Length: 208
Image 1 (cartoon, rainbow, N blue to C red):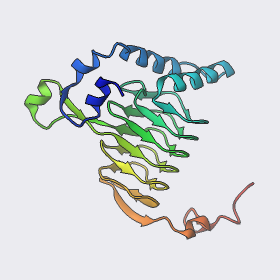
Image 2 (image 1 turned 60 degrees about the vertical axis):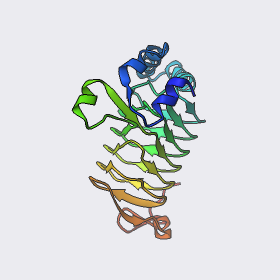
Image 3 (image 1 turned 90 degrees about the vertical axis):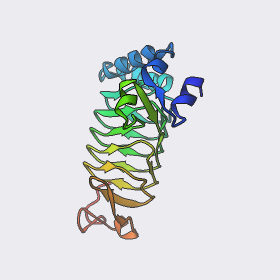
Image 4 (image 1 turned 30 degrees about the vertical axis):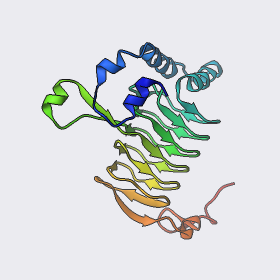
């Protein structure tokens, strides 16, 4: 981690634009994001996307993929993708601090993951101060459409975050949670391996 990244992940207040301007590669990150978003859907374009993910993101595990377009304050430079992560259209990463996404996690369209904030003080905001907290999303999580995840949040393995939720607190593993602000509604149980879609039997409706 660079000295700039250490400051950005410290939780302390810093002048955002002053620090951004000190990274000589900042605009290169954004240019790579722009190249990813315009690569298109040809064999050559898909190969370019895979290369950009490996070069640009903090980590990009095997078989991880982002549907273009995506948007990120640092192009995704501070985003860690595990293996087999799938991210659908229009994901926004406010990646001033680190964002960790575990193996086999699925993220639906129009999700925003925010690792940056600003002080309540109008005077400090006017001076350009910000502060950040990393976000951790576990393995095999399903984040449904139009979810917003706030700074410092941890989401446990296997959980489902319902559409339109604003995740304002940590979510444990293996639960279904939704709402604004988010609430935990129930645990994921063995019945969820038998039934789906409000009581329909999986065994009678699965296509191999």
